[in-house]
Length: 234
Image 1 (spheres, rainbow, N blue to C red):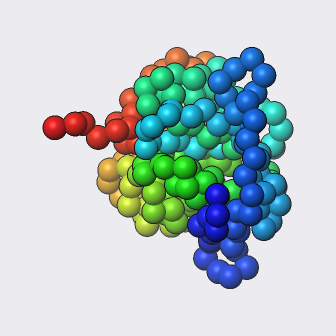
Image 2 (tube, rainbow, N blue to C red):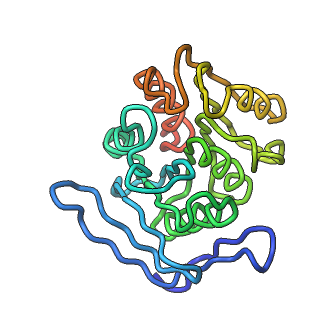
């Protein structure tokens, strides 16, 4: 990969370029461990490739970092979606932040992931983020031209001030028993966002949405396929 696109925020001090890419198969699976060497440090990710397809999804978790980032909320939602969607023509990239909890740096990580996917043939990218990551993907969705849709799960408010500039389909999912980030956050974001938008409140679900994990999966799978999947052939 030569001279890949730069990931850029709103100023010269917020820029990141990919300098090298390495990938190796994860033992016992078809998933690849991906390492992006960038001008601001290493970005790690897991990659499930749908060969010959041009749709992709980038997944982001909360602010704590750690191995759970690539598993996702609910019942290992990101892992389950990646394994299911790759068979239906969508590549999945599950991201580890370089600096978990730092909004601007995490947005750059997502933009770098989008640049990488563009370099390997992606033409449509959907973003999925949980908690802190729910705000990250809203902001990154405003900045990345290839992003066609955003799903924000149990999002925080900080970082969503300009959601009205997103201009892409937005799916918000929140538990009505969230004791970490009350569902009023998603309601606030929903009120400020422009159409097309949808808000789903899951009864009895907490912040991680484990109590309604199947409904969570059932909401996200068609949304991702409809927005980032291959257009119908004539």
